[in-house]
Amino acid sequence: MAKVIKKGALPVFVARNTCRDCRSEVEYTRADVEGDQREGNYVRCPVCKALIAESTLKWKAKS
Ligand SMILES: [Zn+2]
Image (cartoon, rainbow, N blue to C red):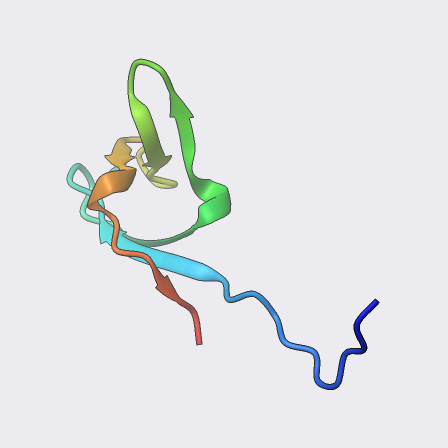
């Protein structure tokens, strides 16, 4: 087993988007992505429960 000199951490990726329906600004992590065969991958607006296509999110590492 290799020896750890300085431990790093995997970055947490977040994406922000504005809900088309209720205009809430929301922030998502990868854990918020749901999906099914019919809708594809999506995140759900926590305010109005509308679906936002995951492909419209721009992910970036949280600093
Ligand atoms: Zn909404």
